[in-house]
Image (cartoon, helix red, strand yellow):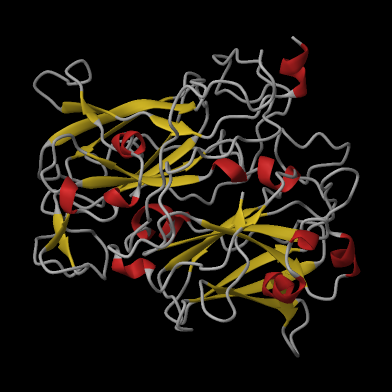
Length: 198
Length: 263
């Protein structure tokens, strides 16, 4: 076997295409999951309000957001997570919702625990995010962190993001609504969200 | 209508790395990282001929993420309950939909050629007249009361899947004057991780609209574009019943693992 990265690539990967304007037929509607964590799931309750804007600051009413996250112990419900932590059987950690006519979608979930990062570091609590939509030829990947969490300062992925742009990855607490957070996705424009090459 | 997606979440056992029943004897380690896409095999975010990208594309450089546990994990749907008609879009209503009945089948593989078992595939499409069963589609073509256009299935232990449907029609759209989409079926795949999530479109061989379609032509690499064009297959064609089209889907493959390096 050759060195890492040298192995022959046998097949060209299938390219991405836009979900188009009619994705609700196949990926949303009855197949939406807005409740990522039901009542039986342990953890700090989070109501996550996501709003999507285009380059001109107009709301995007035909996008879809997918969330992937760890449970409150910082454990993913997936065979690649071999940490000796317990899986919560009532919690898959996946949600997806299309934006409404105001460009908003809402998830009911819990705040994830910390998971290992590069080297021996621990990452701050975060959610993995995919944004799909008409005019989006391949999914936009980003992350949601929680503003004010002290662990953010130790997060090595956040450290890769220029300081001036880190705030674009922060959900902000919604005033007067305990446990409610707002996250804005700006697909371009002066407040452009930091997107990731996964 | 297909059954709801909202079933009780369950995970695939970490020791067996999945398999419906005992068919899967695959003992591969779970990937601990995924190779990057080769240059030019994916579309850019900004592709001016596809006008909607102008207001919906990032312009600042992406952050290249180290693939942490968050990216090499993802939702596992290996135990989703499928209804019998979920992968047969011609039997979801009381009558038969109009149009050419087709079988669409293939394998989901990683880029080293290994099958991806238990991958959730969802599809959606317009009807034979080129009209989607969606409130915002105003194309002056008839709706078909016997066709919704949504399906889903899981790949088997060899990565195989099959759908029965009708051939979707081409339809006009407002990207530019006299713009028409070539006939296509939308495919959504959850591979093994967040990193391998893919949504794409399958086209039909020989479509005269290919040279005019900015969505297909947004992919710079010719070989990669060809990936999206299904092939007519006489062996998949069912006598007196349906024409067969083969469509294999290739997801990102795993980086070499330390386990493999030792061999």
